[in-house]
Length: 280
Length: 283
Image 1 (cartoon, each protein chain N blue to C red):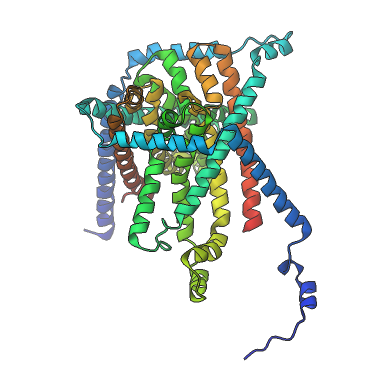
Image 2: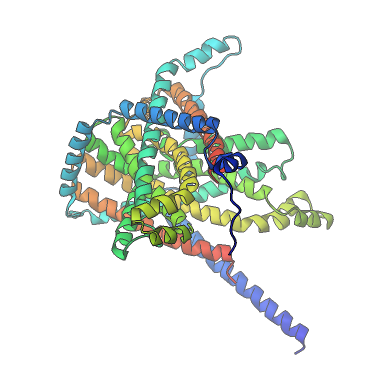
């Protein structure tokens, strides 16, 4: 049995001060960070008027709404709701497809190794940033005003905001490719365009496809609410039922959204696994 | 047949199979896409009519900026800057309060929702399903319902963000919990600790950096989300944006949208720096 050598506390404290107490500076910094955090939280809770009385009254009303929602029922509107749900999924699909078409050139032009001109690729990057900095719902509201009510505005909103996101992801994928195949193809006499086609595209294609599938999934979620501002799909029905106080239909639509999102998640996960593994 | 010929034969067969699969997949995708275009009422005529409309709309939102009177023009463009900054501050506070409340709920629920930590299958099942429902329903749907229950203003926005964030973060937190080393927990149990004490002293120290990092990421997402909650009456800059878009006050649209983009970029950068510091300080 190994017996540790005797060591008095003072000597140990001298050897490893941090094991006994954190230095004063670190403790003060931590306390300061907590203080700032709690102060901001207090301001936030005061500003949003989170009083216990209001909370209790609201929760009571929420319970009443939940009681009204039971049992969820479609009251004969099943065909309309199903069509709206189908339209939502179609909007997500069409919007993602258009976004991908726009994002491929944006991605290649925004990549440093394809466009060596700094100003140009910087410009394309900023365009992508601007497009995705604005929420899809804001785009939807603007497009409803520009092209009128209906799913077309929703599709354009999804396409525009995701062209930015996908463009950025594509540019990063293109910048991360292995340089050697490009050099090999170029050495064999390929033009720049041919090098992109035969050396870069095969490397980035699986990455692009997996991003696109992921965004298809997330767009189905965002497409469910675009209708709230009039851009088609199930969200329009939902907002309408809330306005009309038909709460059991509201509950039915929420359940439909849950089911559809879960189904799309499962499909997209299956396809993504196949694409990433590379079907033999 | 020689080995080489056999190989060539097999190789060509493989190539044919792959081409056939690619064609079938491509055809299926095209059919699906065509169907989705029909259902979402997109056609060349609509596009030809709509795209110039969008371009006109975008051009309409641009302010008039003349080099000679640049300062005055900028002042006119951002005539409501003071009010917009207050509303933007409200939006940030909504996102902050919602994220904090959501993260607290997620942290509490993530322990029963971890397969390795939950006491009993029923507890695990209920916690998991609860988190799933909380994150699958979009914030805006919660906001629509909460505005009805709690009245107009930022409070329903905070609660909507809190509920949705609790679901999204709870799943991520639970995954972090499941990856934690169970050795310290066994040690504490052997020393007679209860379940709650075990979670606090064996698991929390391991997962805290991951929790903080995920929460900061969620805050970035919630800043974007809270900006639109005002569309349904849940406070912040969203209501102002809704009004100016609906009333075709073109120049204000671009002013507020640019302000929003700048805020989002600043918050993203700040959160990224904070995240690196948090990971560095606690890891």
